[in-house]
Length: 129
Image (cartoon, rainbow, N blue to C red; front, side, top):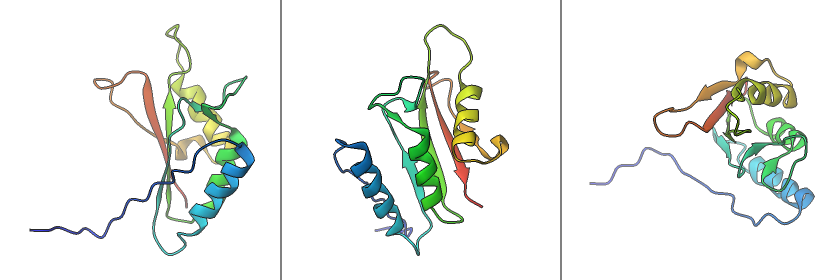
């Protein structure tokens, strides 16, 4: 018996070499889904940029561009790894950074996590309204 829920999963798997070229390709890819409801899942190695970002981070400007390119009703999901190793709180800080980067209320940025599975990872998600 085959089940079909009408859901498809597409993966953007372009190799990351140049930030500008990659961002342009991401925006073009997202714009090709104008009729479908989408969940855009950003999975950088570690999350949003720290003070000194590297290739393992998504820059605030990049997530802002992606947010601007998605449609009403789409969902942005963002992987965020713990930002420090000294036990100080980090989730609120990164949640605020994400809300400011995409210029929305912090209350719109929801958090999904499981302390029993991974204490050092959260997923932020936002429905575009």
